[in-house]
Amino acid sequence: MMSYFLFIWFILTSIILSFSTSSFFFLWVCLEINMMSFIPLMHTKSMISTNSIMMYFLVQSFASSIFILIISIQMINPIFCYYFKLFMALSMMMKLGAAPFHIWFPQISEGLPYPAFLILLTLQKMIPLYILSIFKNQLMIFTIILNSMIGSLGGFSQFSIRKILAFSSIAHLAWILALQFSESNFWIIYMLLYSLIIFFLISAVNLYNINSLNFNKKISLDSNILLITILLTLGGMPPTLGFVMKWMSLKIIANIVPIITFPLIMSSLLNLFFYLRLIYAPMLKYLTFYKWEKNFLTKMMTIISPQIGMIFLLISLT
Image (cartoon, helix red, strand yellow):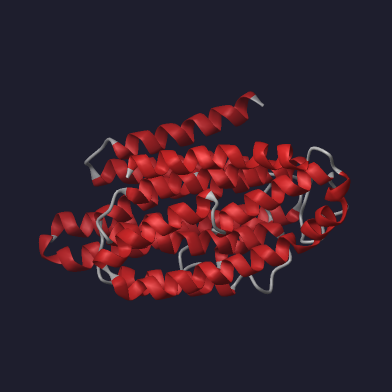
């Protein structure tokens, strides 16, 4: 357990150091520390975990090799400036598992324990996103549209919770990249709120050992309604916190790059559809039995009240 927290400390340290440096070489060092600290957290005794570790290492190493190679070429030949930005962006998209380099991301997700999966969806994205915010280019418009399409359509045929959340992460990545392209720092708030929602969701599914869509018989009615609320928040159902952060993002994006607002909206609607499919069974179970619960409204307010507070805080920040 002590070693587990030590590796997390290394991951957090690498993120903080990357945000405070102006050296490309030191950024590469932070990326390597980040990767090598995460790999031990991926390990379990299953064969699928071993395959996931190997695939993750190969993808991340290849992306890091491109990163350091482009830095070296740029130092030798500064005329390489245009291609420098392009290849830097491509290498970071590969590290993020962004489309069209997304094939490895859902496959690796399936072989991870839930704590490592949470880190993959949140902390492991911070350094590449920070580097992408520096090296924006017109290629990002194509990437944003592609991520929104693949992230929403890819989740339809999935029954594994991990793969559904992996494709959902790709769809949310489209929103973050769109905010970066709009020259807005709101992408940081969006990422933090997304990480918070994912933390609560993965903590819940890990606690109840939920791995597939058919989970309604495994947990209590109170836990069902909590999971339903978190999933609707992640999907962006009004009037949850997830809806408010997407609505505020849309206002920012529409002022700068209105062309990408339509695919983002359609992606959110499709994502919400497969979240509704995910919660259909537990919701039906709860609606069947809630009339016998005397304190139904009290439980609902207990779950919803923190979200209302977060919504007002988010509005005040912007």
